[in-house]
Amino acid sequence: MKRYLSLYLYFVRFSFSKSLEFRMDFTFRILMDTIYYFVNIMFFKVIYLHTPLLAGWNEDQMMVFVAGYLMVDAINMTLFSTNMWYLPFLINKGDLDYYLIRPVSPLFFISLREFSVNSFINFLMTAAFFIYTILQLEGPLQFWNVMLYSALLFNGAILHVTIQMIMILPVFWTQSSRGFVDLFYSMGLAMERPHRIYRGWLRIIFSTILPFALIASYPAKIFLEGLEGKDILITALVTGSFWLLLSLVWKKGLENYSSASS
Amino acid sequence: MIQVTNLSKSFSSHVKEPGLKGSLKALVKREKKIKEALKSVTLKIDQGEIVGLIGANGAGKTTLVKILAGIVHPTAGDVSVLGYRPWERDNGYRKQMSLIMGQKNQVWWDLPALDSFLLLKEIYQIDDATYKQSIEFLADTLMVKDQLKTQVRKLSLGERMKIELMAALLHRPKVIFLDEPTIGLDISAQKAVRKFLRDYQKEWQPMTILTSHYMEDIKELCPRVVIIKEGEFVYDGALSDIQKLLGDEKVLSVTTAEKTFKVNVPRLELARKTQEIFEKDEVLDLNIMDPSVEDIIESIMRHGMKRS
Image (spheres, helix red, strand yellow):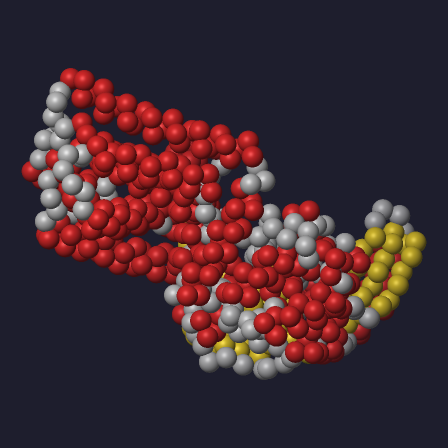
């Protein structure tokens, strides 16, 4: 564990020295993400011009949820997105080779190698926005709730990247994962909607087989309507199952890896 | 020790005719093509040995190396390297093994080599003393001391290959797979790499498998060669015995007004064949030679061991 931590610190250090070399690109990316945040916040603001309540949440409550999923997005952009972008190419061009021969988990290596410094600055922005939104809520704020919420959001980010990877890995067989990845992004929008707008079967689906509601919407319950023990249980079970599924697909994929080359 | 027993590997792909029409056809109906990259090969290599693996493109050299390195799973058969089954990718094995591919780079492109080395030190858990010693020995013998702090992408191809070699050998592997380490290098860089590999082998005695298209590499480094043709080993033995294999053959090198060509002829038919050539063409020059190692290997690669 300590070893992996120090390896990760190397990744971060390398990424820092790399990204600071390209200043224009660096600032531009931060700006783009900031605009994306702005658009998302405005989307819900506009809805609340027409209705005082959406799925039982008022505007202040909804903003807590919005800040939450923006934070998850920023965590993903910071830790995983560059790596996920490269992953299909690593597999179908046969560049996975050097990751497979190292005495280190290749999954750790390929999913965390690139730390995105510009997105980290965006993450700080979303965190600040989040603090602002919870301070707007009525009633006293409990320290443990904030801690639990952070833990669940982080779990949400992990769950998000796990699903994403499961959708990318079919590239071991198909040589191109465009279809699946596009599907992932369109379904991923479900993460940006509060789970209470879905009813019946749809709500069950979004908290189990396509667990996008567990990423940001369930955690937000802590501040909005109270989180139940079974919510945490479902989150843990679903995250665990997706981890298992990922390691299974990974293992099967490697058996099929042909290491194209030369 | 490396023990390969009846190892087979086949890849399946589908055939697609060229053009859009072919693509549409392939969408509906696919013809599956199985390519047998390795057909039940057996091989044994001892500690300290360096073996040259020779074969044409697509003969199965790289596939064999990748199975031994644990990257590719075999279809059938078994392998044991230092007591491990490579594709189970046990850390105990991966710490003692190294793979160098002339066509793929492993060091961080945008960083100075020393940064990549520090990361490798952490990955392989190399202690400080060994690390320092390794860096010194490798940088000295490869003569790249001054390039270690330069970003790798700014180095020449030859310098980069040397850095790759350093990166691959920092942890003092007991098994080394070299897949075309001199590809694309100019003559002097090739020589430097070759000399280094020879010195390294002498000093550390690892088990090494080397594949290369350059006969020079093989001739200088590998006392033993394995020739692979369409997934099968057609020769496994001493390089020096290869010439004996075709001991009673001579090579005729002929220059006529139109062209120059070489032809292998059994010794006893030499007179008859020479006469035949003189009758057919206007011969400007004719030499009778012993076949060179290159010629023999080329002929084995093309026709196999059975000769007409």
